[in-house]
Length: 414
Image (tube, rainbow, N blue to C red; front, side, top):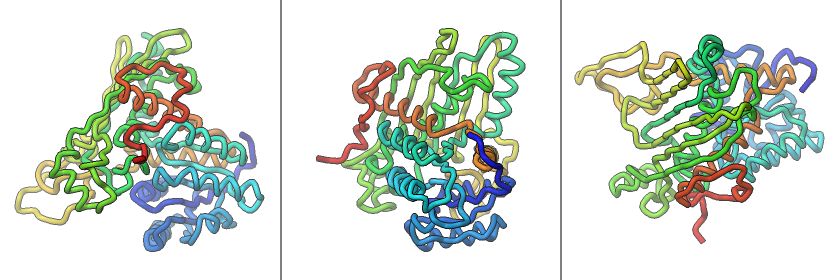
């Protein structure tokens, strides 16, 4: 894409929850950007988001009362979609309509992971963006995580260049469960932990296996094999905890979503070499907080990263008391003992570099590293894994019958 470079990119957010706040914090480390607008369904939350943006010095942010008001604002160039999964396609339809009608001046759109709940939804998200002439970016933060950026650069420059390309990537992400009710509802979220977190793991692994500068489709997806399980949250006492926390809409006794998922993915490079991804995710990990583990293996080398193996740790004895929080690490599970601290979560997790990259690409009219096409490719892998888990067999690709496939836990009761 080519276009005149803008001095600044002015962003409007759709959504004002947990992930939108992560992006807002990350924007402090991004140049040439202002956060000028926000819309979400809850007035108090969107107004609070606007106040935080203004307090952070990110520009004058207006809380809008409707999507249309945000999309038609004269001071919004690009939209960041950070709303619940089941709302995203309708948001894109409204944006598409306003841009095509010439009422909106928006030039670009970025969407949080996963891009959609099914392959057909993801394909429609891509079609709408392209039909409206919008530059588009898929917000997969782990691809831009600082250890991933640095580790991949070293491995491919020093090791792969002399002994051969990497052939196995492992990725795991675990925590004790999501923040909001809709994450636990299969029809709204699109599934359970496989949809929510495996989207990170398969894409960061695919990214690590892809040669620098090579297109993502330089690796061909051959087959996937997946397993899902309900290990913790369907136990009666934990199912009751969810009901007490979120109300009757989260009914894990009768409508559970998986809290564990495993994936084995087979790929092929341009020379016909077989490559493998191993990934696991769970909502049943009770440790200090969110744990991300990554490995990349090749003929004579290995790379490892564990997000909880931090350089900074703090010990607090029983005499130290206080309220629950997430001020040390995301999904924090304790306030006492020896605790790891991520002093810059937005940076380590990749949100800062992700937003910096998207802002610069949109500002200059360039194609981002991660686009809606990549988001579609991720959903294709996820649907293959869900289908594999349902049928108990390996799913080979291409697999056109997955186009309208809906995971079991996302199907509405008849």
